[in-house]
Image (tube, rainbow, N blue to C red; front, side, top):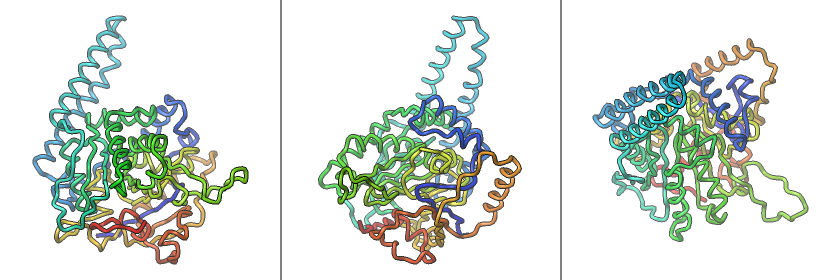
Length: 455
């Protein structure tokens, strides 16, 4: 397997991205929700060229039947159902303006009946054909070869277009990777187009659907359980939006001492913010001032947050890779970011298979020889400054061309920016920079095959 060209970013991710008119339009996540929605629509269309490759590569099945596009009967049925429903949803949206030519009030009344009927029928079909009735799904794979971790609770929240079958594949793949039972909280799909619209509503209006409340309840219950020493929360895609809402609720409702149990890991995160408040150090004296240490885990409520993103994944570019950058202004995106110079958005097939591949011989546990994790890290002293707002279109085109050439010519290096979280307490803090690899920085990697990292 060819080495992955990677970029790892901590705190602020910089580089080539949207044009300046989107940069200047980036708003804090607490801004007017209608302005946020408009900004997101602009960003959506700017990144639209990456949408066709959101399921690419298609014919690579390192996890066999667990990969979303593996040609099993169940997978093919899910794909076919989404294709048909998505075509119907696009036709429905395109038909809505036709009702404007009808005289009022008949046009409005007909539109309301038509829209309500279509949305209701779509939901019934999705629940019948894709979602099922279970709010949570547990991993079913045999983990007898791994040590038991009954004191840990692993919770997964899925993203766009995932029904019960693909959710089962996701939690089973995670369980095989890390040797823990995984509880999947189902974010039920309404098929691709309507799921994207739901992302806009959740992200810009902070709207919590029932699955957000279900996941929040499961995490809060696990944190409060005395026998539970650790809660690992993994999210993918739209689950990142819901996860950011859940974290905001937890910060307001759960004591900080319990939140120390929590760790969060995201893949293809679509959220526009990811908060992790800072608390005062032990020697802080009121009135003497406080100089925060950015991304020092010891001063964070949640000590471990990591984001994994593919550089040409449409959802990542619409989410974490934009909003973690300085272009996004006051949006806060805490946690270390690992950017892999690849395409694809599917959790098993494009993220876990590339970053956390299974052992090829047994199909159980992760392969220790992992090109992603063994890639060398190059630490940059400072992040690149945001480009001047008056940059010419010619320079923008040249920069985008250079970016594309860079993606075709992988360097095999990992760039780390603002790595201020390498404190003395971090086991990698005394490792020479030229010897750092992704595997030495990745907290999630230390859970592989049932292992337990030091706290």
